[in-house]
Structure formats: structure tokens, C-alpha cells
Image (cartoon, rainbow, N blue to C red):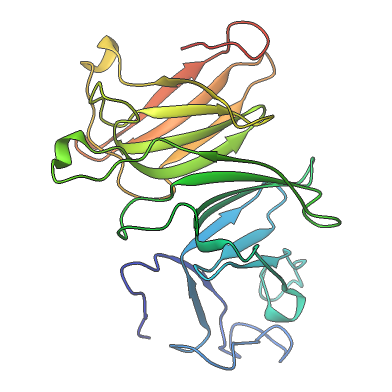
Length: 257
């Protein structure tokens, strides 16, 4: 079966339309329009810890797919009939990454906007936003412009690529540095409470003080341990490994490495 996946639309959710896989018409639901047989292709997606799938389109539509129970025939799956769709605010011109925290009903979006428009396809975004009470009475808590620079000198650019949100912080991974020190694969850290910048982590002497660049939009994953330590896993595409950072803030809301 052919797949239709343009370069800029790299996140996909597969909904099978094959009756041999799903026993009933309800679970064999496929989109009425669009490329392929049963394929929905969008720019960004997020599978939360409750296994709810979130799919964001570049035009600002955000789709929520709850996990359907296992019927003993097809296994757990996602279907169109239980999808709910919301539209991002009108000033968002391009939606590029989403992270939803169900315990807080909080949504983080990485976006371009009328104030911070997109210049080219590769960088993830120029701003991050936090929305509270996402599923009930959505309110914008803050918007933060993140380090971003495109120039004729590519070695001096600041190119954000990926985002994750965990605990009290939002983590932005950079293909090229978030500062002028030219640290490849720098991870810039922001407070989830107000969007303010905390600091960064970057390769240390343990791995030769260098890594390759981060070059895809799900390349950073963060987990908060019970003792407050954050485990940050980062792609290293040059040396074919995953970099494992342990980071803990120095005091309440303080900076650490």
C-alpha cells in the first residue's frame, strides 16, 4: 500500500480500513477524503501517558483521539468516530509541536504567529505558549519568544527543532545553539509556570564535549524522577547514540546543570 507523506508533514496516525483487521464497520473507519486508504497525515503528534493521541495540523486544528478498549479481535486502536477537534487561536499561523499534560489539563504549543511568522520550513517555531484548562475553559497563560535566528551565516544560526514538557519545565532542543557559544544540540530550559528562561544543558567532557545536531521533531524526551531530577534523552545523529543527561534545578526554580 502506498504512503503519501510530504517532507514537511512527517507525523502520521494510521487508521486501518481493512475489514480483515477490524471486525466491524465502526472500527474500520477511514477518512472520507485525503491521500491513501485510511491514512491521516499531519505535521505533529503526541502520545501522552494516558495513551491519548494528539495530532496537530499546521493550520491549527488539534485532534484528540482517545484510546479505544481492546475488543479481543483487533487490539487497542484509534478511530475517527471518537475524535474531537479544536481550533488553535486565530493569531497562530503555523502549529508545529504539541505537548499535553492531562493531570493539569495544560497544553503547550510551539508555534509561528502573526507576530513571529515562519521564514522557512526547517526550524520548529519561534514561540512557545501555555494554555490552561484546555478541555474546559481554555485560557492563555503565557507566550514566550524562544531563541531563534536565521542568517546568511548558517554556522551562527539558532535553530529550534523539538520540544518536550515535563514537571515544572519546558525543554527546547536546538539543531544549532540557543546562544552565541555555538553549542550544537543545546537544550534550552524554560519554566512551565511563567515561560521564563532557566538555562541550558549541552554535551560535556564525558562524551568529548560534542555531539551531532538534533534534526527531527521528537528527538528530546524528558522524565522527572521522584527526587526532582530530570532525565533528558537527546538524539545524536552524527555519532549514532542517545545522549543521557541528568539535570536538577538548584533550589526552588533555580538554575542547574
